[in-house]
Length: 90
Length: 445
Image 1: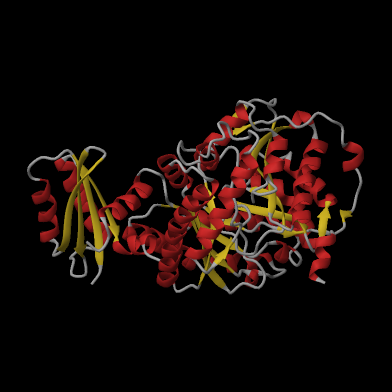
Image 2 (image 1 turned 30 degrees about the horizontal axis):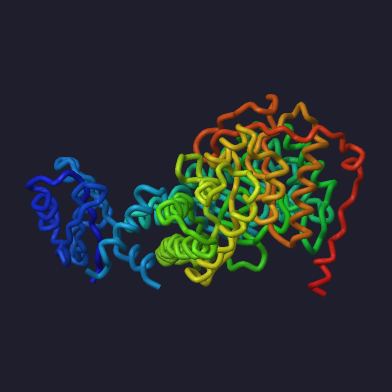
């Protein structure tokens, strides 16, 4: 399994989760975990997704998600999970 | 979740708001194979490096995209050209330099570093060829950089080499002079320019990493407001661990993808002229209201000790300069403090006792004369030799008066012309020869 972490930050409104997850579904990316929080007073959604069966390499998937993010007026960041493993685990 | 929300948001904040990035991925390669007394053969062999350079460039881009990490520059370190110029007549130096510069441009490499020579105690034929062509070469190129190692614990400090260096320096364009440093005890595996070169005793090729991230350390201090120096040290150490791990991740990924051995992570936190990406900003977050105030040296010593301890836990492959970087123009707060008079040359000299850059990216007025610059370089290199550490000088000679600012743009930033002490030292700097290696030398036997 190869995972990525997606962070979506922006004003909360209907359609954000649906918009982002539709891009994931189209590209065969499975959501493993999802969590919502408030970051500096604005909505933040964090997802851990499995990209091992993804139709797109991570760089292209990031582009697609960020394109969708622009439509939804939210900021989307996508990192490979290894970044968190290296930085947050000894 | 596998990671807590706080952990994920912490990493996200470092990468998106606090300018944590990889300052450079450097491919260090043994290029002694280009050595020939026939310039056509040399050029041909340089061109043979192109497929590797291009592939390296593509791999770095793809690794950055895969992980979602910004990699600011791609660099190649080559064997010091002194060795080529021991054999090849120096009249061909410029042609070779331009070929290397073009190789970097064609391969989308930001800097190719190694127009370098070791002249700690004396100047060999090749060393003289590099020294005497420095201004012609750097004025005619844009991506080639170099270093003159004119001091070492083993060899001493060569004032004759310093004088030739300053003669050359005064002939350079400001941007060209930003691509050369004069150093003591240069390490063989630095990923930073201009010190980067492929040193002796290294494998044929390796990947060396330079990280950034002063903004991350400043942020953690400002948010946590530590009450004791131990708490302060611990906060920096824990954060430095995370920063260094990012370097380790990217280094290993590039190394694997390119099929080249992983070399080292340089623990130094490289600043940039952007607001919020400053080493001096960390010192000010510690409570020194303006970098340069009394206490700055202890604050810097705490910072670098904690960075080294956290970094050493994060990677077993430590190398390069691995110290505190306080370049003046390349660090926004440093350049502000140079302008408002909080730091002068003597502040920088005292900070050199704990930092690893020495006097870096400072403007000097040509009107103040060469002798004072020779004296300044001698001071820094002597300090490096006496303290048994790496130090260097990168000054930008300009026609303007002290107090003026020259904008070099990009990572090089705004160069403040600082006043050299107006005392005649010419009787001392006119002495020739070298300062003998000190008592530290005898600790080796």
